[in-house]
Length: 107
Image (tube, helix red, strand yellow):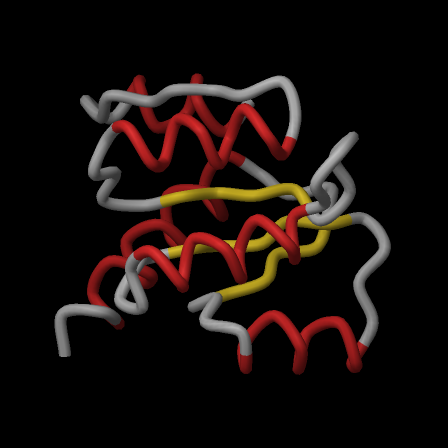
């Protein structure tokens, strides 16, 4: 859904089947924004986030989850995520959070 919404707005969006594939894709292309699911097979979203930030500390990363709590939110933000979005979310939320995430890292 995230890829479909972003593509409908003119973005080039690339999906990944699991955390390892997401990290591999990040290492081979300089994405402007990364959306990671907290629960992915293999490497989970938090581990991928932390590895992305060892590659690029300024990476724009949004964590999405159906299972987030306050501690998870704090961990995600302190690990470099610019936002954490709770599922289910709407197409408008994807657009708003993406725009905010990109602006937040430009400041």
